[in-house]
Length: 199
Image (cartoon, rainbow, N blue to C red; front, side):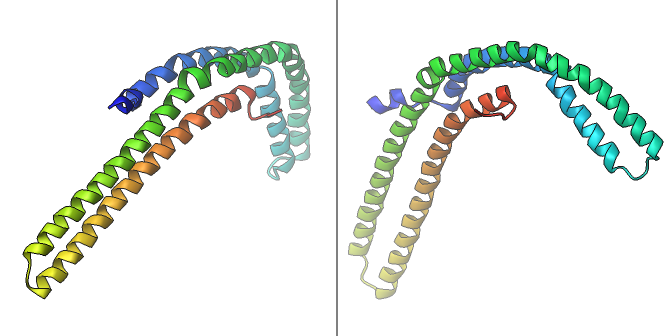
């Protein structure tokens, strides 16, 4: 029964994750605001230039005008991007530092221990189900005389075992997925902070 206190529900998991997500989200909003007129605009304008170059429906004059205007805007967007670079770097570092201090300790370790306990509990439950099915099967076999009935009972027993195994494997996979999701969430947050630019 001690294991049960370690096992947490999805709701409890979400509660543990909430303050971490909220803290990082606050920083993410600041970063996003700094990126709007900087790196986001730079990317948009680069795309605009590339599209204009490829667009066969535009005349040369129209194309050149769009490219020239986009390049002018690109200059000022790059200045904004450069001006905000240090601030963004500082905010990303702050969020990553927070994640380094809190994510594993306050969230992942708890989920991981919960998953280990849930797996152990599921394994022992499965062993008990198998043992119960076996003893039930043996009692039925002992009470049967007819060969056809015995054959039918063996078939039923096999099916019950198979069903139990499928249910067990599905439960174990669910536990693995929970642990994997908890592990990956941190990297998802970092990915958003860095816009996929990993060091």
